[in-house]
Length: 162
Image (cartoon, rainbow, N blue to C red):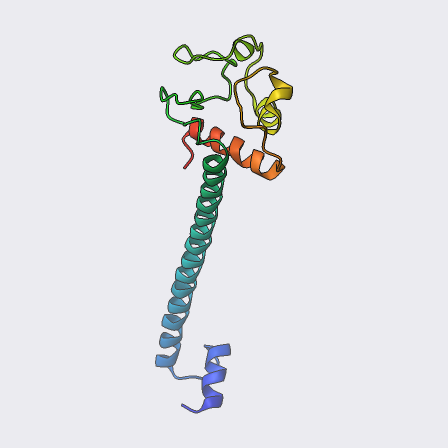
């Protein structure tokens, strides 16, 4: 088959080629459709993988900020109190309410429930939110982005997000 005939065959399968070429064209169309589906599936999987990898990197970044700023005194394991109380499911918990931790009288007397906004203010400046707390020498985390990451990490611990 000459080049011109082949191009005509591809553009107009019923236009002048032998019968066996029309049958072959049908198989080519099926093959192209199948390969297109495979390519789409692979690209979708790739973008999903990239999204999951991005989420994994973000979660690792959140944990790293928590580790750098908070882990010296706090854990995220339920019942594992250290110099500071564990922060497992702190969002939604009344301040100073863990029964197995010896809070400062200021924290015991704090009359609020931890939410993301209150945590953000407290992480930025503990003495402004609860004067007389025992968070010394910690004086606050200045970067808004870092505070957001710590809160996201604490929220993920409560919800089980990796």
